[in-house]
Image (cartoon, one colour):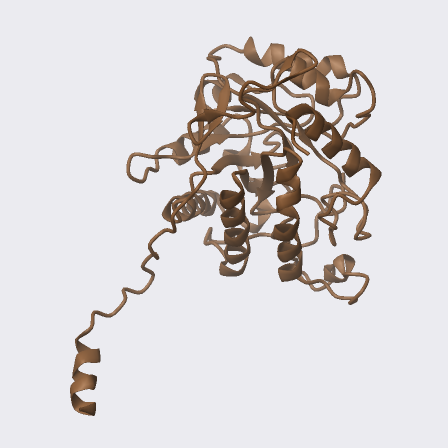
Amino acid sequence: MKFQVLCFLLSLPMPTPGAEAVPKARHTTVSIVGEEFQINGRPTYAGRSWTGRKLQGLLLNARLVQGIFDDRNTNTTAGWSYPDTGKWDPERNSREFIAAMPEWRRRGLLAFTINFQGGSPRGYVSAQPWHNSALEEDGSLRSDYASRLEGIIDRADELGMVVILGYFYFGQDKRLGDEAAVLRATDNATRWVLDHGWRNVIVEINNECNVRYEHPILQPARVHELIQRVQAVKRDGRRLLVSVSYGGGTVPKENVVRVADFLLLHGNGVSDPKRISEMVRQTRAVAGYTPKPILFNEDDHYGFEARENNFTEALAAYASWGLYDQGTNNYLDGFQSPPVNWGINTPRKRDFFRLVSEMTGDN
């Protein structure tokens, strides 16, 4: 009998090394029709308006880029220690991110930005000695980062949320050895998303392409090449929706406007709310523009109690808006300085989510 069992086991087909698992059933599909985002074939916030401002088709969001943050530089890791343990823990960070997601969604938030190379954990600084990159020097994808991100995207899919996935971040793009590595990283990240069958992911090639990138293909004159590279990869006739952002107050350039599926703006540095609506108008006037969504996914201006603020002015111009709240590495304030408290636990966070709830009718 043992010999027969052994023969049967040996007759079974062996798994192919590196073969992809069969994708799970997915719940959330993001698409674009004209200037509107849709989820599962229905416009977001369908039929909804707020103080005369149309919300239908918009994608209210927050910059939560450090959901898979880690630091491979042992000289800087201590700067992200949790106050209760005295240690940094990337797995805890991602677990707490996932635990907070249902409350964000309950308040009406439909999307968040998260990045393979994070964002500055110290705010507006020039030097970035920490090593936070899901992308290796040769462009391969690190399995530990990918595993944490998989859990986050899976949960977003279950909750009906859209993930704005950033591939590259200035100050960390230097971790890639050359342009060939940037191309491999772009291909690997794109195939990874498509191979998992996610339909709730849209791509931001890099954060603020006009700010301090080492590789020319990540800079304004050529970044459209990467947008087109992602668009060319398909699974069962489906591809990812792609764009790129610029520094605060900057209007997208023609080469990006012509090819991007949606247009990303940043409001940091813009202190006059009227400039926000002006940026939207200027974007629609760029040569080559055709109707497509315009989306702010980074703005560090608040004043949510005021009648006019950057958030409300974006809506007045029919553009989506996203909160950027840096914080101060104290496990309390903000959403970008590890260790991050991902809860709605400060006056600023509460004011933002209160306004989102009021706008969207969720509570």
